[in-house]
Image (cartoon, rainbow, N blue to C red; front, side):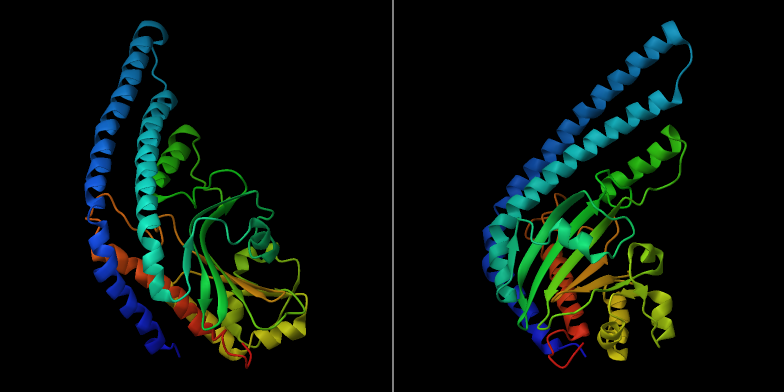
Length: 340
């Protein structure tokens, strides 16, 4: 059972901090927000005008020399116009959001005890590759968005919203502003509808457990079982075995860790995160959990250029996302010393 009273205290403190300390301080940012929005609108016109001119030059060239329009050339002109405009808008949006977060995150994190929002990497690519939760190791690239570090009921915790991949841009991992561009490029330019699964986007949660594991146990989905170089662990829970693949270097320890109660709680986590699958890895004295998010969801996001900076709705969404991480820890009962 989730400790709702404990979590409710976080929510109450968060709301008070926002109303009393954050909202009055960030009203001035609304002027900057409007300026950034106007800048994007103005420069977007220039971007599209430039590529419109490129298109006219191309059509003039075709009419005088080539006499045959290339669909690929036209498609590339359109795609590059959209890519540059979207990239420019996305860059300004993220810069504005970062400026806002640097001002208010230290205050807001006071609602969650000793939690801190940090800009440096806190979960390394090496740690993620060691987990063996995915089907395309090794990874050569990783980018972080929001990172948090602190503890919950004496359990040290690191949270990192990240994209990992093989060094190439992944369709499944790009922000929603760009996904349709890749779809268009695949369909028109490369005549392909396939999406390369080169990356994973989501939240990595690293928890330090008050015990040391003798083996390495991985819980992932059946589609990724080829990434796990360990023998499969046969479990009594048939439904769990259908949903997840378990591999381990220590069969006895794996069955000790994956008790009936743990497996049920692990399945319940999917409901907390909207039905998304999750994976985890028990290694040394750490539990690494990965919660995937689709390209249309940017977690912990605030500072929309289309809404008032002090609009409590944006902060309410961020609060729910952070609380969902705490609910995950509550669901797994990791702070209990009586076992998992």
